[in-house]
Length: 211
Ligand code: DC
Image 1 (cartoon, rainbow, N blue to C red):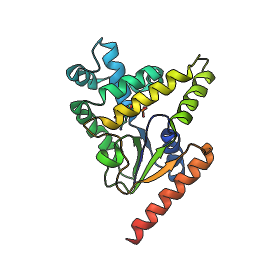
Image 2 (cartoon, rainbow, N blue to C red; image 1 turned 180 degrees about the vertical axis):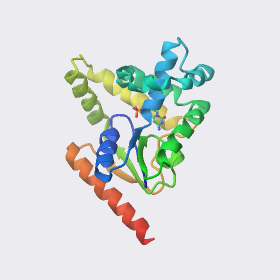
Image 3 (spheres, helix red, strand yellow; image 1 turned 60 degrees about the vertical axis):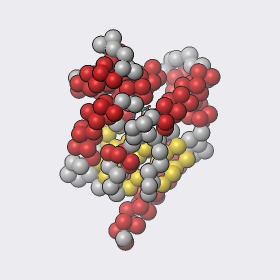
Image 4 (cartoon, protein in one colour; image 1 turned 45 degrees about the horizontal axis):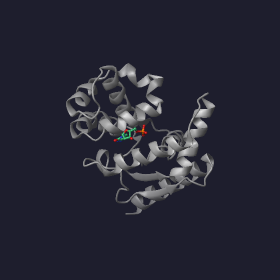
């Protein structure tokens, strides 16, 4: 069984994917980490994330980089969004994601193009979203909790810039896939969002069984 969880930055898709993984006993791949690793590798190589050849060369990143805490920063998230517009970069990361998706026993993947490109035949597809203000507020709280000094206006601007880039790129833009259910987490607690996600997945699985 493959479950695809897509959505914009800070929508809660990662938290929901992990909770679904625990509920259904499936391994989870946060595919954003792959793009973040490419972004960080470009930075370390003093390359230009907007230059396709530099970004492609960085796809060769060392697997150990996937555990680097620096991957979680806003700055690296923005680099990831920039390298992800290049078709060759996306292509270089496809096999890894499909191998994970098709492992025996099933898997859950979260990202931007899981239900549209990586696993269009997924058994269940959820598109997680939330208002820009709520997403910025989550990032703000997260930064405070980690001892940072966040600025709300720049967080809102960053999220809007990332949404625009992720949704308007030519290759595999972020969009709601055919057959995906929308889950708006703006006014939901984490527990409520997870319960709704499980209900949506169960309903999709049931519909497939009956089809
Ligand atoms: O989910 P995230 O914030 O960690 O993703 C960082 C960036 O990586 C995101 O802005 C766009 C890119 N990305 C992508 O293009 N496709 C994916 N499946 C996952 C992430």
